[in-house]
Amino acid sequence: MAVEYASMLSKHAFFKGLRSEVVDLVAGCAQEIEFSAGQYICHEDDQADQFYVLVHGHVALQIASPGRGARTFLTIGAGEVFGVNWLVAPYRWTYDAKALDDTKAVVLNAVCLRRKCEADHDLGFELMKRVMPVLIERLHVCRIQLLDLYLKQN
Amino acid sequence: MSITAIHKHNVIDMHDMQQLVPKLARVKSCFSDGPDVSTIEVEMADGAPVDYAPGQFNMLTVFGVGEAAISISGAPDGSRLIHTIRDVGAVSQALMRLKPGDQLGLRGPFGVGWPVRAAQSKDVLIVAGGLGLAPLRSVLYHILAHRVQFGVVTLLYGARRPADILYQSEIANWRESCEINVVMTVDHADVEWPGRVGVVTQLIDQAEFQSQNTLAMICGPEVMMRFVASALVDREIDAENIFLSMERNMKCAIGHCGHCQFGPNFLCRDGPVLSYKKLRPLLKVKEL
Image 1 (spheres, chains in turn yellow, brown):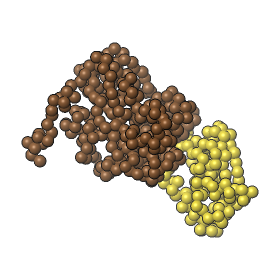
Image 2 (cartoon, chains in turn green, blue):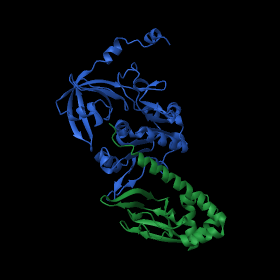
Image 3 (cartoon, chains in turn brown, yellow):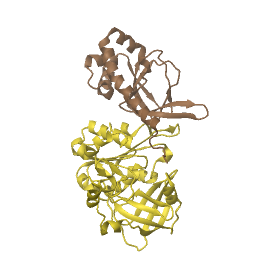
Image 4 (cartoon, chains in turn red, orange):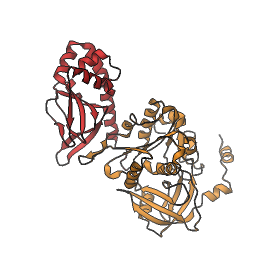
């Protein structure tokens, strides 16, 4: 199975260019998972012990606000990842994630991954090099959304 | 330069004078295109056709209120003269209140439009944000009418909310026709929205085009256009093949008054569509 996951991960954009021995290490923490449309994958304040590598489908990241209901602030598609909360204590989800359509992912066990990163800093560094651009991109997206560029300006 | 020299350089001749006088036109039809947005079809009072290129604009006058530059959003085949208007000021509000049969003044068309000839035989990437889809719709009509002349055509469109998406039924038709790839996103959405949420620059990574043989056309808020153009350069589209439609305060529309000056360019005359190669250094100048 780990060989199969290694093959899936090495084809994924997030792990592109990662050495095969490092992919093998990550694949040791992997499991394939499917969600049907409308199914919640995680909830705010739950323990973030999973890191999702999306292979197929779309996932909406949502936050609920009193009086305004839940809002989707970002959608994630195939080739992307979500759940980087696994990397930083206290390892808690800060949003809800819901499958928008039938979705397939490789879920990485974060406890396993954190243990391997602590034992092998090269692995940790490789993963950080991949997580940081995602975080920077999402921070940029968030800034642009906050600017509300399409708002009518008289 | 002395005032005399400026006057010599900036002579208004008879042709210019004629372009400053509005012609009488009539509203043929009008309909809502979402909150605060209306589309009106206009015909000249004398029945004369108006030839224009995709990306050009007209100056529309509501008598007793004022004049505003409005891009043309219809098919450039001379059959229908269509403008999509957003309620942002006194003139646009007055334009949106016009009803079929009402008279208005029209000057134009003005400006340099989209480089549709240069796009022939290339992949075409159209990136629109908000109301920026309006001046790009003319290009889409042109491409759809001459589809075999173009390679892969992709429309990436970002809107504020799902309700703000322009031309919704037409976009659905374009998607179904498979003539062009359409990918949309909105900045903000409630949980009922089944589509993408995020910003339009995020769509660029997965868009399919051959970088060395692609021409890109971008229209939307200036911040959005800056980031889109930059992302396209990252995907190795040459800055010469990236075109932006700029917006400034058009007044005379014939390059004399200077209200729309952007660096060395008068956008009403030299634009509104200019290449990113030309615009890139100017876009870095704050408050320009």
